[in-house]
Length: 369
Ligand SMILES: [Zn+2]
Image 1 (cartoon, rainbow, N blue to C red):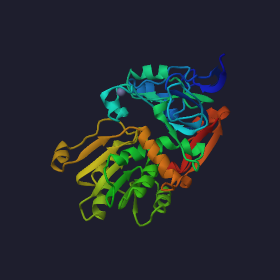
Image 2: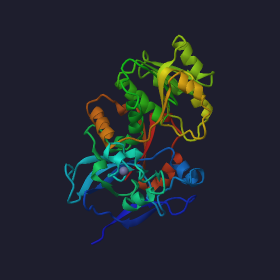
Image 3: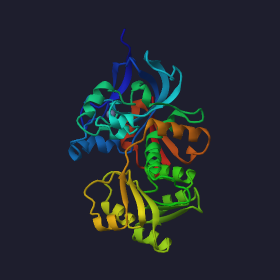
Image 4: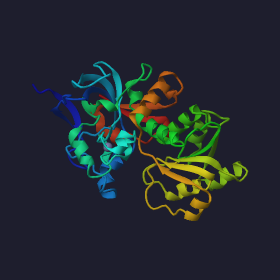
């Protein structure tokens, strides 16, 4: 017998989503069905829905009518017959990363490099993503969602479902910092530090032993709030006041910071990234997780002469999600510095247009189902 559920669906770009009755998923094989309690509202969603197919035609959106929703958390409702280690009633976050599970990259714990790599409920990275969307057509803006067991992450009791729905951006920042190697005593420029990714990166870098963070953003008010997280270890700079790279060089006696993370929003100016890169010292590593796009005029002689490493990082693995869940469970990361804004599923369209108007990364957005 078929059961129905409520889900917000996008039928046409430019039109509001509608709350539809659709078929509830059933877990087969090693898949899991989760009753969604909350799903993160990505500040970038309105932008993705409106512009992605024009800006990045190689990156497909889920076929319409589509159930979007990137960051779902909830309670396991049903497990397929081949599921191990997850049971009905578990409180979980679902990592929306989808991949083949069988290629060399997937087998090496690098699913983001898989040719099928896709963010469920959001967008894909190449035409093969359409195959992933057809296997897992549900996003988090519905009452139930289907997910492969390998992407189901148990969350600790002290993490609410709404907090769980903030996992995606936390994970993106955490995974990028892990690519920097040991942070103990090192110095790090975070460009776009007061945004959603920047705040997460700040919290994790502090927890992971960073010596000094050079937090670069535009607005002084949020920079002050960020500095209050660790006044001795965070140095702030508003790049409306001049060159962030020159500021960091000056602060470090001319040598620069060991590391840099770029966390700027979609289509942010490349100048800001390039300027901050000038503050990284010889042999430094620069990791990009932001939404800036376009050709970057990098001086390749500088790149070689100074042995710079430029690296991209996308999303995070389920293993990294488990590490974050453990850090929150043990109090190493305190999510109370961030405040949620929550809408019910019925107000999905208000939620899409209501994000991004508050306190940068200090506010996050979720839909409760
Ligand atoms: Zn693969």
